[in-house]
Length: 99
Image (cartoon, rainbow, N blue to C red; front, side, top):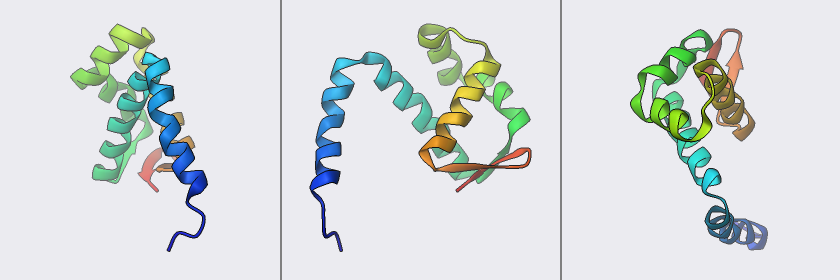
């Protein structure tokens, strides 16, 4: 049961405004979300496989080419770091696992 929902409602209502003000925030959220759901679905992925995944999967490759313009390795590092920061995945040795 929620006892203090006001802070959660305030954060939720601020998100659409933040997205409207910054297109890159939307792009980052979409790309990060797709990656997080992949890890949740697969349950794990070798960290060494993430750059090849970024290069192989069209939406990640295309978003990187259009918006980020960084190497596959840098894109993979960003995805991993963001997913870990979100608390949805964890690094276990050389494996990325769903949290």
